[in-house]
Image 1 (cartoon, rainbow, N blue to C red):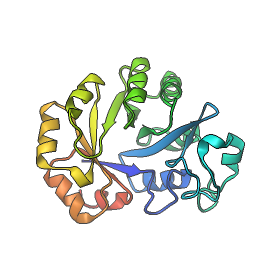
Image 2 (image 1 turned 135 degrees about the vertical axis):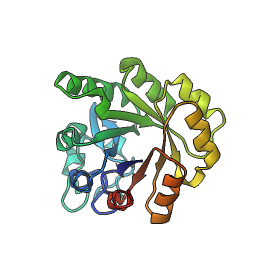
Image 3 (image 1 turned 90 degrees about the horizontal axis):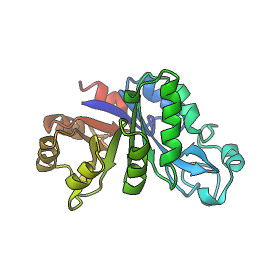
Image 4 (image 1 turned 30 degrees about the vertical axis):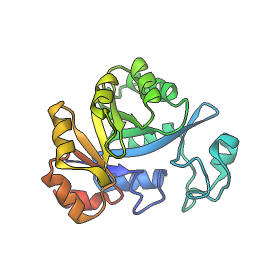
Length: 227
């Protein structure tokens, strides 16, 4: 079962910051998950559109420029990173799961992945996921051999058909809705199941028992120590 650091290791450090990513790597994750939005054709690494929860700023991302965003404190003196900084920090020590949060992110992410692959990275270093099927489809059209993850919340009608249409490599489900039936159904399609966000030891043990293939966690050490 893969251990995927959720927004780095956000149980310990400010989420989606380089500090959080370094902590996740130090704790031995197999992959790091981060979120990206498009600001002035730059991929900024932050989860919310609203700046108030994770930074000392206010307002919405789309109303701000990159200079303003980079001036903010994202926690413990950390800046909001851009995706290139995250890639350089990870430096192939783990896979990176890039979640497309904002609009018009697919093409930028695809182009950046192609650039890094041309520099010696492997396509296997990347997973791109989203709830937004349009963005996933656009990404797939540019990077047909990079793994994509279909994010679902609940058990949407026809989600396996959607996964097939998108040529998804992974189904990523919420812990709140994971059942043996869901896992079996996905595995019957020869697809792995990853589950978000699994923090409690009892839930970690349950995911192992259910033969989940990977879990996102704020506390990677809890997963690593349970191996």
